Amino acid sequence: SYELTQPPSVSVSPGQTASITCSGDKLGDSYVSWYQQKPGQSPVLVIFQDDRRPSRIPERFSGSNSGRTATLTISGTQAMDEADYYCQAWDSSTAVFGTGTKVTVL
Amino acid sequence: QVQLVQSGAEVKNPGASVKVSCKASGYTFTDYYMHWVRQAPGQGLEWMGWISPNSGGTNYAQNFQGRVTMTRDTSISTAYMELSRLRSDDTAVFYCARGYYYGSGSKYYFDNWGQGTLVTVPS
Image (cartoon, rainbow over all chains, first blue to last red):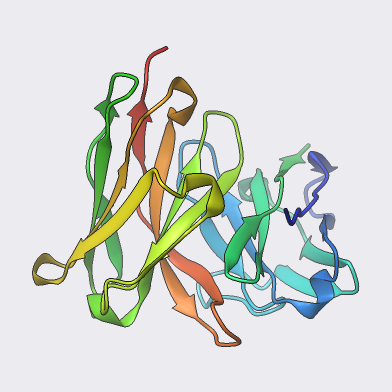
């Protein structure tokens, strides 16, 4: 089955840049979405179609996708960005989520 | 604004079934597919499938084939997910999520999510 692999954790200092990777076979041939999930809350869409941002999401969130790797970048990370992040893509007619990355703002 | 409101927490015995509802408001219910996602305690997100509220057509993930049934009632803008033959490892939060279709076949992103429904299956 198709798998999307993310690093289990990423640590970042406030104001610095956090990069979260998502790897999978031919991932660059698909669109990738990213979801933020804070403890006890539902996931929230932060990036769709690789690099597009919903209007309510701050500009510090950006995305890219090429080759085997998609990347979610949080520029000027704030304490409120501490959360789990999941990438998601489609394998034919099946949605696949990444393994998830816990972002800690130290 | 778009809202997806799910039914409350459930405790079910092993072997039983559970039916979770998701009431949509703030948009035309039949215009968007509804997806369901499972999240076991401390674990990641797992897609279960979708239902087309317009046609009633469904597409289930292989892991849930034969155990999951998704239905809808358009008169009350509500989608349902029923999972049968429950096991202790089905203990999880179940989310409904609206799928925004972006073409290229069966491709969606999930732009609005319900608050989640905790289903507990004691071992």
